[in-house]
Length: 308
Ligand SMILES: C[S@@+](CC[C@H](N)C(=O)[O-])C[C@H]1O[C@@H](n2cnc3c(N)ncnc32)[C@H](O)[C@@H]1O
Image (cartoon, rainbow, N blue to C red; front, side, top):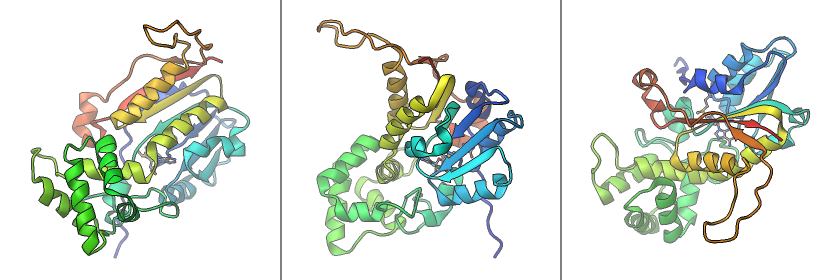
């Protein structure tokens, strides 16, 4: 059987790369290579002395990067979580820009065997890096009812989180929950179809994915490391797809931008010196992009520049 080629349409490509203000001789890091849409655009702006460092925690994404870019002397590639970017000696010389295009790629969603989707029956995995950590099935087998409910509520804003968690714990006493199809059917049985055009398992699947991949902790650690490694004048360009991610990015920029801290009622707390400045406001995909690529619908881009 011919191998299916799964593609990813890069989201807010022009805006995100514009945000990096690429200089031909600069040194840039794309922490979420995916299928390289943004990386290719950065590379096209680099001259012979420019450098592009590529990371992804998904081995399949890294294999694509190796196949396309390994021969380019300007490019270095590393299979790792971007939260560990400061451990990569290639970043020690400082960076002029860091791009993070968060969440999952279309190939990850579309390859049923990865277990991210309720649209096809497959092992309930959901790890971006299947060589590490616990799968969604392992998490659902281990966690107690309260922890499962909290994950569905906090990461998915699932109103029926408690009902779903109770059903999971009851069902798993009979037999383990190991398939995406079983989990999707359980959720449909418990909550029924309620939002038109939206499968009842959408929120729970997203919540489990965020949990299994520790996405919010990786983001927070990655932002801190990026700020440490950025040169003065260097840019951070981050696309998020979930309100919790966008909130983390927004607060990170605000907390490092020298604004006075503390509550209205308490004594004013001296502001720490500003290390970052937001560049413009949050940006959203254009109507034309949304019409061409519905998967861009929840995207938010924030850009910041390092001051200190
Ligand atoms: C939205 S896609 C990026 C698409 C890419 N910009 C493109 O145009 O093809 C997100 C990618 O980031 C990777 N990823 C998500 N979180 C990561 C993390 N903490 N560290 C490294 N890679 C991560 C995923 O494996 C996925 O390949």
